[in-house]
Length: 61
Image (cartoon, rainbow, N blue to C red; front, top):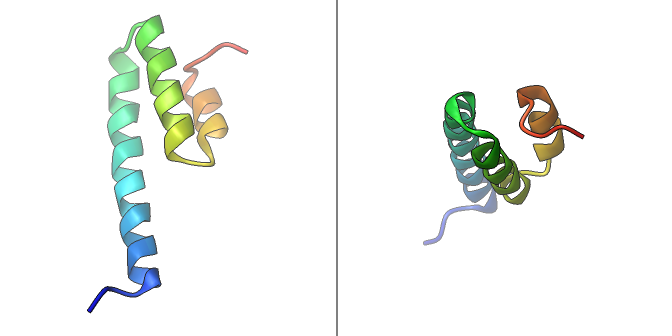
């Protein structure tokens, strides 16, 4: 029996939180080009990406 939509939603949220934490660690040591790549990946991962990009200073706009 497949899991409920709520369980799938929670699983997606937990996975997204884990990925965002991973990108945050990588962004601290990243070069300029790597930061741009991390910013693009964040945009594809989560709807709140622009706020994270500004807070983490990944791109100058």
